[in-house]
Length: 117
Length: 98
Image (cartoon, rainbow over all chains, first blue to last red; front, top):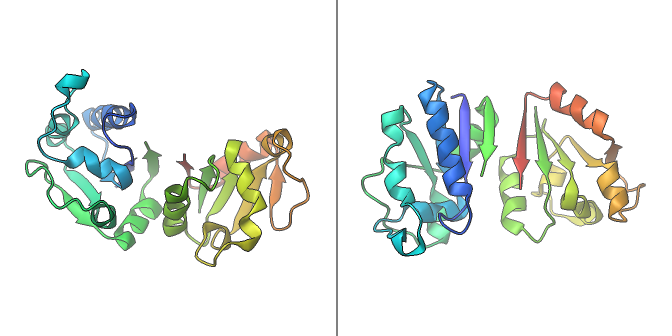
């Protein structure tokens, strides 16, 4: 894997989620090998039924569904972060793989570059 | 061999925790901006803390000076911007924790 993008922010409180996604899509467009890891509060990006129209924002989870179109299939979520936040149901249309602490460490250690948002 | 930059105080606990979990023994940490305050507490942190795993802990001297952090703390290497650049080049990658 060459680029690891680590998302750690909730979807609408800051522009981090959107910026991380922009980078991922740009890298995907240029055929870079990308993995996205959702950890910490970024797990909230993965909840189903988000409806941010009221706050004049675009639906992040809908945008995440575009990732496979850009060749990004490696979408990972930190199992422990989900447990801490009592998140049991994730958006089923996202093809997520839950990863353990150990797997996350090896992602950090082995990626060619790591971008955190 | 990764260089980790840390720019937040220890109040951002989750960040410290994540760094501690993912750092390797050959990696180093450089404290920058508000991260330099962490230099005051690393002498008494747990064995699982990043400070006790990192091969080296560096601190950006200008940021330490600016914030009144002593310039003679043990087990910390004080560096300037030029050395920061050299470290960034000599490590396989840089990860920013912020």
